[in-house]
Image: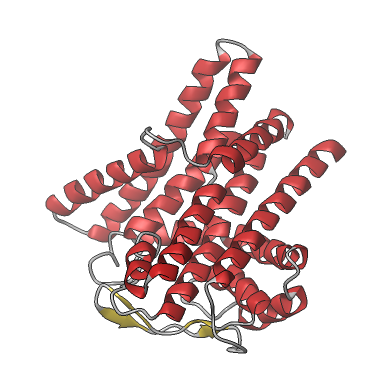
Length: 313
């Protein structure tokens, strides 16, 4: 693991302190632009979109990894310390804990002003239609997003950075961005996005289950109901169309004693999903802060595990 762990530790601390850098184009935005460009070109040329999907997925992931490798290769020409700094910066940019918490807490603050403001703010971080959401539904949508993105934006990137450095981390980030842009089941994306969705499922298989356990630990650290979180994870981990999403959502639902999931509107169409957790009480604005606390604790635990394994190696 070597310098991978040290670079990750630096990047992790930078993310906690600074979040995403202001005034700079984030690499995820560049990946998104490439995906949008390629999708448009592939649709315009006609033919099988299922075949084009593989080209879109492979080119996005491989090009992203190649760019990360090129940055590191250039830095290595200057010596070990410039290389370590480059690795740390790429790791920092690949993590999203502070940004995720900032956006989620922003929803809570907006909802405190009015439901309309909450709807407008939550639309920034969820894919579902938000125009008719109630205050409680806005809270639940935010809790689900934080729980799911604890895997996508914190635990999975840390795992891949520890295993293969920034190159592997950014390969994962490319796959995750693909899934968020084209990995939908509606008619427009079913063919062009199928391979991206499947790749994301594979890459998140282990991280999703690890995230659920770390969130249960985070619940204990935050003085929430860790025992119930683990119970709901065991019971409801398969209650989702995705093989991975319900794991972390179940941990959050159990720790908070609220019910997540159910039917929601996406692109104007109702999508039925199983429920996750028990409706022991109504969701409330402070639940957003509570799940953010679980997310931070889970990330800290993951970092501690990586450093411990590095020390034992």
